[in-house]
Structures are given as C-alpha cells and as structure tokens.
Length: 223
Image (cartoon, rainbow, N blue to C red; front, side):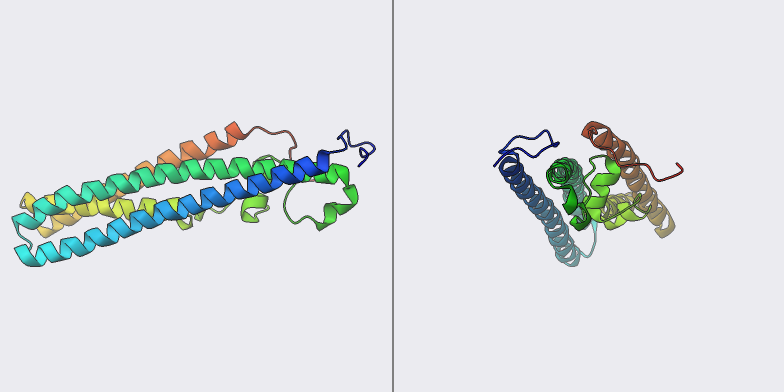
C-alpha cells in the first residue's frame, strides 16, 4: 500500500491504526466489565447486610445485640462502597483515555480518507468536548444531574444511606429519642454525600487536565 499523499502517514499506517483501534476497544470493554462487577459486588454486599440485619433484629428484638452487630457490619459495607467509588473513578479516567485514543485514530482515518468524515458519528477531536461526544453522545457539557445517574453517583448515594443508617443506629444505642436519631442519621447522610460531591468536583477536572489535547474541537462560528 503506498503512502497517502498529503497525509504524512506511511504505507502501513491504516493497518497499524486499525490494530490499535481494536486494542483500545478491548480495553474499554475490560474496564466497563470491571466497573459493573465492582458495582454488583457492592450491591450484593449491601443487600446481604440488610437481610442479615433483619434476621439479627428479629432474634434480638432490636436490642443491644442488634445495635452491636449493625455497628460492626455497616462500617465494613461503607468501606466497601467507598473503595468501589474510588475504583469507579479510576475506571472512568482509564475509559476517557481509551476514548481519547480512538478519537485520535479517527482523526488519522480522516487524514487518510477525508471524504469519509461525514459518515463518522463519533468525534475525531481529543479534547474534553470530543471525548464526551464519543463516550456519551453529548455535543455539550453534561447536565448537572449526570453525576447522580451514573454508576459512581448511585454508589455514592447508597453509601451515604449506609453512613446515615450507621449513625442512626449508633444514636439508638446512645439512647437518643426518635427525633434525635433521625437528625443524626440525616446529618451523616448529608455529610457523606457532600464529601463525595466535593471529591468528584476535584477528580473530574483533574482527569480532564491529564488527558492533554492534540486535536482540539473547532470553535463555533462567532466565538
């Protein structure tokens, strides 16, 4: 195969790019599978813990034995949810890198055959906007609610519920009234979800900065 005139790419470019494209696609599949597996493990552990608490509560009439058992079990579930959320953040960072790589390869495809550009539905630009367009089919910034409909957001909310339940059960053990128990549980839920939100606001821009850009998206006319 001769080199394509004006592209600056060698005669084996298409074969190499295609191989790399499939490699990145396989990497995306692996991280997606891991994300779903880690989330499923957390959900299964949470479900099993709720069932165990129900049995122990019936056996102890929700007395001090139930409180002690819950205060041992629930922090472990919270820790599992926390590390799951951290790993999901790492997986999302890895996935963004693979999507960026495929966008760059798509940019090379257009250099090899410019007439094919109208047939690509994914972006050929490797900045944040291009990665979002290819990964989530979004032409603009994601909505504010996107964080809560994604897998990390769901895990963060469920884990915060675990934090609130743990604090409420601790309040029961301390002899607090119903209002005080509910207030303590609600406070720990809000504290946990706020902590996760602040952590996410720091982690997402950091991921974007680490990507680097070779082929930025063109600016809209008049900008």
